[in-house]
Image (cartoon, rainbow, N blue to C red; front, top):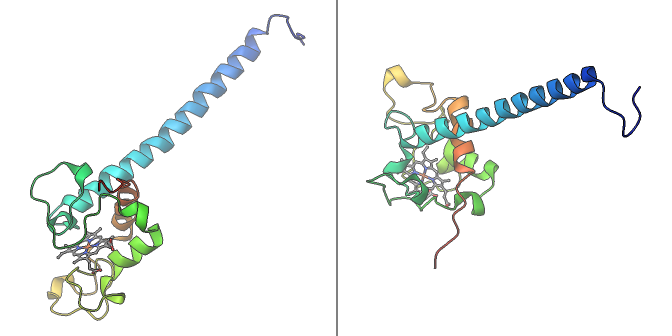
Length: 145
Ligand code: HEC
């Protein structure tokens, strides 16, 4: 065993190097997953076939044209709502506001005027909802006034 100050054995160096490579790959993998959820969530927010949240909500960070203003600006939503509150709102907005115009994205009971093909299916899947929340959780723009 080489003591302090003595040259390290090449085998030990290789093991250390190997560990560093493995750790950075795992880290990059986890990071890529987070990036992926963000990108997918952004897609859910924008896509007309999915959430199409941009129809009613503005998000400054998105930098896309034709953002709606029927609902509140969501540029800083993660600063004022927890993930749990956001989820509850998206799943069933009428739960705390019976007169809301916002659609229920993950509720299947008690909906009116649903085409037969879409009956008993939520608009967004659990995965889409999770990705959407990952995206919303990054929206932390402070008020500018
Ligand atoms: C048809 C318009 C409409 C669409 C589409 C819509 N919303 Fe909303 N949303 C509203 C309105 C209006 C409110 C405020 C009234 C209320 O509480 O229901 C609101 C409130 C919210 C809130 C609470 C914000 C706050 O500051 O209190 C969140 C979060 C939210 N919407 C997220 C979403 C997401 C995510 C989507 C897409 C999956 C979406 N909305 C789609 C109209 C819409």
